Length: 160
Image (cartoon, rainbow, N blue to C red; front, side):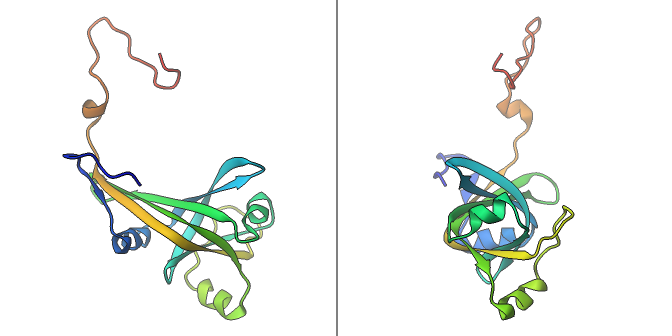
């Protein structure tokens, strides 16, 4: 992740803090490349002894994850009051967990998927790099320009 600008309220997290934050959430996104295009999939996950695990079933995601492919995983969250947010990115390699002992051990910590269907494959992301940041959530008035009388508001969706 980029280094925060001087005077900013963004703080780079230590690897230890990144894992502490990952333990407070259970929903993240896995980013991978399929057919030359980037794809992002939401997943229910759990930190597991310095790795990230999640379940999936047959389909596009599983096919793309097989073979030790590089992936990126991201999870975000905020404190109870909604005043401080965090974001953690784990870059690494995806592995299909096939060892019976590992499967049984992970079954206790692996979250249940939200979507119906068979999710009988356990994927483990082995990190190469873990980074994160924490920042104060600023009021919209600090990032959105004030409206001038008689001027129509801009639509950020179409650039006008």
